[in-house]
Image (cartoon, rainbow, N blue to C red; front, side, top):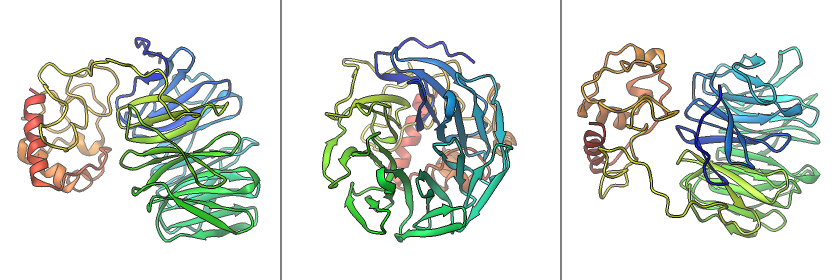
Length: 408
């Protein structure tokens, strides 16, 4: 499926309909991004245009990995791994199945071996025949993978970092708090980012060191090609570039697009790609931390009936999907236009999950308030909606008032 989008200004790539959760730098200089809108977009970084949109997955995406020869692996909440040929196609060249829950991490070894991990607590190393060696040992979801010269490393919600060799697995570190990200470094060292906001460098000789990257959980890491710098993205918005040798802060990213959920150095290490909450992919100067190609004086596109993107005086999140109509481009969810009084799962043309398609809830201020209070995982278990709750009564009331105006 080809994407017809107006060319954005250089180094600001717009096309996703939801937060960008994963990035991959492809062989030959291309870039891939994926996110909550269930789409993978293949970009031409030189022109700032999309080459192709891959729409096959039936759930939000959280992991990408470049394959030898220019191909790509993608995976997410539905648990299937799609293997795409160079340049993409209408459907994957191959599909790998076996995980019993969302796939949250993919990693490719220098010899092309693919590994995956997910919420089912397993790590899988895939063979050429499409069968997998299943590695078990984590006590909970596994969120990060990285290949090292010694074997495959994994990190998970149980706070452990494990190394898997042919003979089995061993615990490299038991850190107590969930570990969300891994990056391989020269000499067999590993960088890990945790829920406590710390980055830890685990050396191959068993020693380690750490530094505080912020007060929020670290959700993404990327190592520069030469291994001297490390990029971090933290839940809540902060993103930075650090010196690996001494943990020194080199640059705090300060510009558009925060908060960031994914980071990837360009192949030459001179720039850094990021993706985040605002649905855009951006490029930053890795030597200065400055955004490249910033669009000055750009107006935010708004719906005619929505005078502000969030309720005045409130920090409550904006509507979780755009209310501008189903023709507004790829979106992370169905249009919210006219949602009040509409039955759940009733909008024509949108592929609802089976739970929402039952249509047993009518959206009113009261039912939407319940959804944002208890969460979609409780109100509509089995849905593909991301879990978003608003715990403050004033914030929730402001959000509902905003939706009542913006979705008319």
